[in-house]
Amino acid sequence: AAGQEEGGKKKKAKAPLRPKEELLRDAKHHDVPVRRKAVKELGKYKDDPEAIQAIAVGLGDEDVAVQLAAQYAMGKVADKGDERTVRATLERTSSKCEWTRIAALSTLADITANFGHATRGSVLDLEVDVAVRARLEDEDWGVRRAAIDTLAQRAEHNCAEAIAAARRLLEDQMGTVRESAIKAIAKLVPRGSREAIDWIAPRLDDWHESVRRAAVVAIAKIAERGDQHAIELEKTACDDRSWIVRKAATDSLAKTATMNDLSSLRKLSKMLEDFDPLPRMAAIYGIAELVGVGHRKAIRLAVARLDHRDPGTRQACVQLLEKIATSDLAEVVGKVKERMDDEDEHVRDSAFYALEAIKKTPPDRCRWISDLPDLGDLDRLGFESSDDEEDENKQGLW
Image (tube, rainbow, N blue to C red; front, side):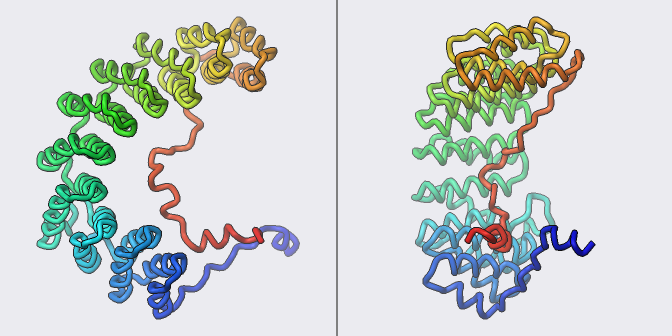
């Protein structure tokens, strides 16, 4: 047993909390990494007034890394809606520095509770509402974006005033603000709102590709499955000049279309011919999730493209058949086997693995479940990582 313990990986003891006085001193250090780490660790001093004040000062730091650490720490140092953290953060929404205003607004979205919470509706909470709405007219586009993000996070679902504010920002001069306005509308309106889809639809022709992407994603989020108006908008976006938009449109079409919608299935199959790999990948997973295993029409559409001139399309079709073809389809197995002699090595490799998978798939119709990780909230990936974990990951690197 002792030998097993020695051979196994020893669990590192958690580092003790650093003295508050030391952290308060380091929070004013000239070196950015030192300040960032100190401000973040001050969040562990729950309900401590000095820690709250030092973190609030960090929201106005000249370096964005320290500001992000302060935003994280402010969410940890007290419960949501705590008057001390909310008040200290609210005071910084009127700062002369636009970066501080952005940090303060973003922090308010994190530290105030959702609509309906016991802390909502207080005098202080109403002051937050006033401050956030005032910043929708800020001269800085980053502040306007943070304001609409925060407003949407705090507002009641289907709040007419918040939706009206987001609609106004659909015409903002900055693309990133228009993008956030679209996301706010999708978050606030009821599912199936044709009116909201019509508000967003003109943004599919926006000059900014991130706005067009946000628009097609929002349409899929709002629309009910089978909504033909939304489906036609998504099909049109599949032909966008930007691969980012085409990829998002392909994902969206797969979510909105129904299994028996052959027109949408043909469009998704056409996306297997896209010259960029990511829209092709979206088509592979979108078709598989939409129709499931054993769908004969989808299988025929993939087989028909196995001789396509583009190796990327041939590989995409092989990968799709790997997911939806069944072992009883001898002709399909033969067609995939022919790709083992393809001139492109990537097609050959995919064909090898596809044959192995198809042979193991029983001849039954069933739902196909994606094996991809959930990457739905990319903006916050890594945001929760701790300094203890960072230090542990560095062990053995030098």
